[in-house]
Length: 220
Image (cartoon, rainbow, N blue to C red; front, side, top):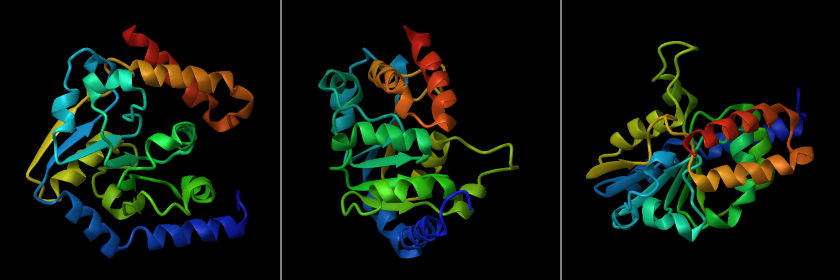
């Protein structure tokens, strides 16, 4: 084991208890018949003023970095957060730790394509949370969208497909250009802050942090 057997077993029990068919049905029922806004972190969305339209939906869901604690972003990206979808990898777990107070009030935290090694890291930090409700989407469901090991959809595409399976009334997608414009300014500032804390950043995600900083700077 790269991690202790105890932590591995805790993570596997967490996956089993938070990825059951009953949990999945509860999550789907939350979206059923509702108008849903799905918000991503694209920098190209800044200045467009869609915030009030986003917040007027029945449910506002966000993906990975699409969480905007700074009120300065609400005019473009909205301020509500009901469901957060995240791959829950090492980088996103670290980011969620930095902005914990800004997503803990949401209804659901949903893991998408989350690996066992990531759950081993996630469970000690957030596994005991009673709010938001945590659901880990089945690995078989995620693999069903892949034509090969090298051709797997990213988190955004996965979430769009999942939501379309929930019998919602309407799905409106905002802030997605699939990395064409890089990341919004808040995330860039957060990445810089994390970079300054580099001694605390695990070695295995330093490369991911650097690549995201490069991407974040492309739009400015």
